Length: 103
Image (cartoon, rainbow, N blue to C red):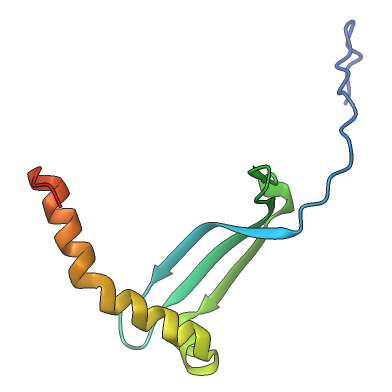
């Protein structure tokens, strides 16, 4: 039941904006086995020129089967292969950061 406030909150009007690009604000790949896996992505409208990224309420959240995605979307398969190919360099980068050794 609403209660009337003695001092109501007044939200200022926001000007209309056009956000014509997409920001990948979250990307999670979880593949616990050769038979099971998911890819989760949160995509949010953005404007690269201003750096503005829309609030989560405007996000598009995708959750798809990893193995089905890899089998049916060649670009996704190529992207994952690039990640796999980069693992040794990523590990070396991480180890250097943890040991304090400059790259």
